[in-house]
Length: 291
Image 1: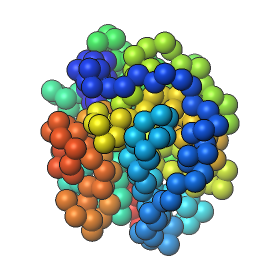
Image 2: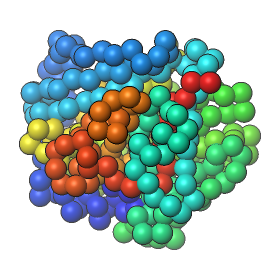
Image 3: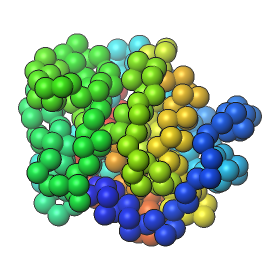
Image 4: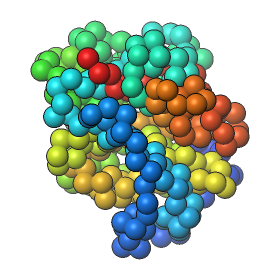
């Protein structure tokens, strides 16, 4: 998705599938009865994968990273580049990350995030509201994955005074739309970005203080992707109290150290194929590092 979520998504509307109903009990039953492939990557990190034939009345391929934030040795981390764009696996490998996913929305021509990004107290990029709706949707900057000075991870809504007002929080990766805040569903605007099915990347925090990182493949007859409502339903099923959407579409990528295909375990589609080689060059990632 990257630089311009509206334009990039519109380019795939023809092969996307618009849902015919809201998520319901049948979807929850499907999630409850499916078998997940489970791989322990670290004492605090688990990778789950499953494919569904009838979830949300269609076919879906889902990968989930489950990070136990109660383990003080595990560190979710934002890795970024100022202007250079690189594939997720290259950015992750430089810091010896256990796992990673693509980060927030970015500018595909000049690089850098188009949403607010602060890492270690340094403001890297500000919200690019001057780009207009063609390149920047306000709702895609309305939540943030944050890490405070004590290393505590949270998902927060944008404060009235803007992200720059959170001077006490050194790391802020904004994105959106927000899906759940304090266990409450956040209203969505009526926009094709939310209504249509696309590949999605998102994060959630559970009642047990686990960070869940989810990548759902899309734009293929082997995995259709999800609407934002459907994405939220998945995080609710996973017992998240807070959750948010990150960049998706052709950007959706999950990396796991040591796996084949440069560690790419999902099916990124920037090459218009359903394989493991279609990584998009991006500006930043959410990585998991053991220290």
